[in-house]
Picture 1 (spheres, rainbow, N blue to C red):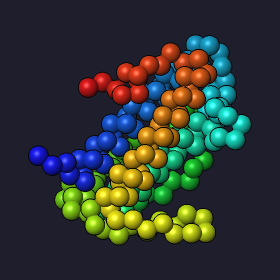
Picture 2 (cartoon, one colour; picture 1 turned 45 degrees about the vertical axis):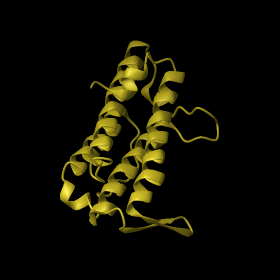
Picture 3 (cartoon, rainbow, N blue to C red; picture 1 turned 120 degrees about the horizontal axis):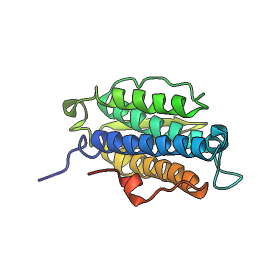
Length: 168
């Protein structure tokens, strides 16, 4: 049995964004229990030259919705990247998952050869659909979800591998 483009993307994004949401719930509870201002965690970084937790969530959302939209040939929802609280980050994840749930297998399957062009700053990157998903989006998506996890773990949250992987 072969793995379809849909199976390799939409359910993966939905599951991992759900896991990220659960991790953010733990972060909010941790902040309340330890009397830590939530913005401390939301603005936390692993290194001075890295982006903060809020950015990690925003870019994971952007990668998931952008990939789904590009493969399906539709426009992704626009999000302003202004989230600065746990409830706002949760709402972003919720909106991203809701969008992903509107994308059908019929829209994504068969897009292995579809040309995808990304305009990043002052240059273009061109991919075929499968290379875009497997070689660009998924590694970047997992990088940012993992970095969000690591930022919170580094800041004292009691998180483990099961939190990252989620319930089966």
